[in-house]
Image (tube, rainbow, N blue to C red; front, side, top):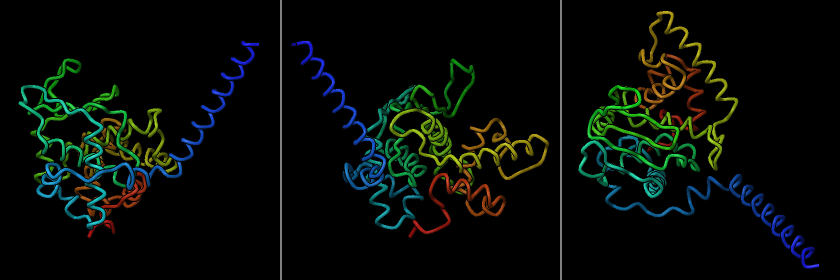
Length: 269
């Protein structure tokens, strides 16, 4: 008899667990964007806000209501990550945290529920660093194990001139974004599959053109593979938006749909 009651209790617990899990999934599905843009977010610390006001041109162009959302998302992103100084960097400053988080939020601003949750650690080197794996010097990389690595000197260069089509922060965050979309966690599969398929076709068509010797809009490095193509395209999407759209309207529109934002329209004041 006791065993029978125990089995019933376990069955009840199992049913309740699954009902609760299903309910939680439904709540996240329907209300995830609202929860992440309005609830569970706190106002940004001034130490993080000041660097955005000084150096982050994307943030500076936002209308006041969007600035507030951007700030809160930066604060949340910082709270979720571990920033680690490497290669002789004395410390990770509030400015470093703010601007690195700003790069991530800029890229994901059209996806309010996305914080690149798989990536828990961000390693920051003062300059180019040597990789024991590739036996080469790097400016940045993204590790599928959940680590983003950045050279601070090169990261800063990307925001000193935001019209040259080069931005290390956006480049590496783009790699993280594509990986995040493919990793089975609470942020899995947030990119629209049809749009992603369209992008993939356009990507390989252009890589083929580039490998055939045709000079395109993207720098040669984009032809390395589809992942680098996407990362380079993201840099140009934000820093040379009009030129990108004029060069390849379909590719630009597809990327805008995938990121759920267009730097050339609305959302800015």
